Image 1 (cartoon, rainbow, N blue to C red):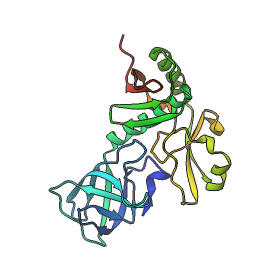
Image 2 (cartoon, rainbow, N blue to C red; image 1 turned 90 degrees about the vertical axis):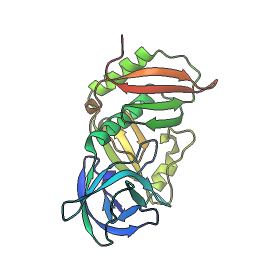
Image 3 (tube, one colour; image 1 turned 180 degrees about the vertical axis):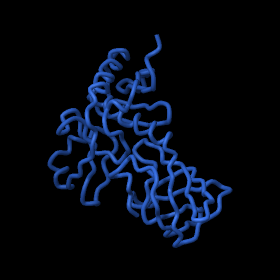
Image 4 (cartoon, rainbow, N blue to C red; image 1 turned 60 degrees about the vertical axis):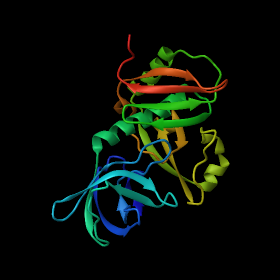
Length: 241
C-alpha cells in the first residue's frame, strides 16, 4: 500500500487497484490518496468511481494492524468492488482542505504555546490542543500571535529523516504521551518556515503548503482540564467581539 498523501497532500484523486476485501467490507488498495484516521486527524471520506461510472461511497478511512495498512470503509448500502479491479479515488476535498488548514493551525499553536502537548483532535470546523501547563493566558493574545504566523505566509513542507537522526534529536517531539511510530526506517517531519526556522516536528498528517492558507482563525475558548492542563479550541473566522 503506497500512501500518496504522505508526499502530496493536494492529491485529491488517483487510480488504484483493489487488492483485498476484508470480512467487514473494508477495501484495500495498492495505493491511495485517502488519509487514514491518526494523530487526531479524521480519515478521509469520498467515493470510488468504477469503470462503468458507478460509485462506491466511502464513509471513513482507518489503519489496519499497522500504519502501513490503510482500509477504506464503504457505506453500508454500497456494492463491493472486485479484487483486481481498477477504481478512481475521489476524496471529499472541501472537507479535507478544512482539516489540512486546522492541522497546520494546531502546529502554529504549539509554536505560540511551547508546552508539552497532552492531546489533540481536529474536526471540520474546529480543533483542540491540550497542553501540560498551569499558566493563565489570554485568548486574544494567543489569537494575535497565531495570526501573525499565518499572515507571515511561512512555507510548510515535508522532510524525511532516518530513525538514527531522530534518536540524536528526540526533543523535536512535542507530544507528551504519544511517540512517533518506529521500525519504518525513516520519520516524516512537518517543517514550517525557511529551513524549519518556525517549527519542525514528527507528523503523519496532511497540511497546507503555506501558512496564509490557514486563513482567519481565532482561539474560541481556553478550558482548564485539571491543575496543569489547558485545552485550547481553534476556530475559523475572526474572534467574536
